[in-house]
Image (cartoon, rainbow, N blue to C red; front, side, top):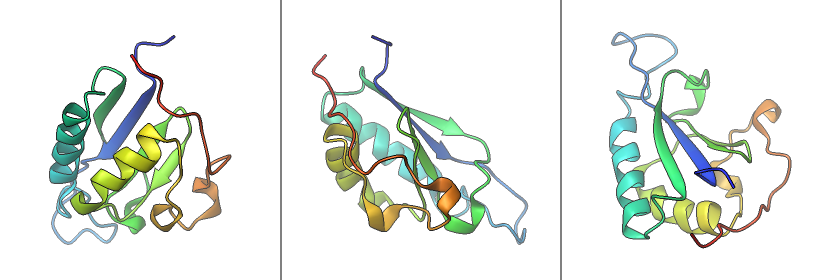
Length: 120
């Protein structure tokens, strides 16, 4: 088994103020990332799941962007209040949260359910 069962990339890209594409960092993505890391640590799964900074994920139109691999789940408009649900439903139980999915079909995951996180 790979060192990590899942990798979560949170866009913390920064653009100049007023850029037409927007800026995830300006929208609070560093706080979302920090909340995610704290939640993974609190659940005792930080050794199985890695939360990483990402540069531009090229999904600026969807707000704070996050992608979860290996499943390829793309969430947009993520708020720190969404983190407990993402950790429980998606990271631990392998369930896609449809209301957070980016609406563009090119970001659609292959399935809506994936294997649960394995105990480490």
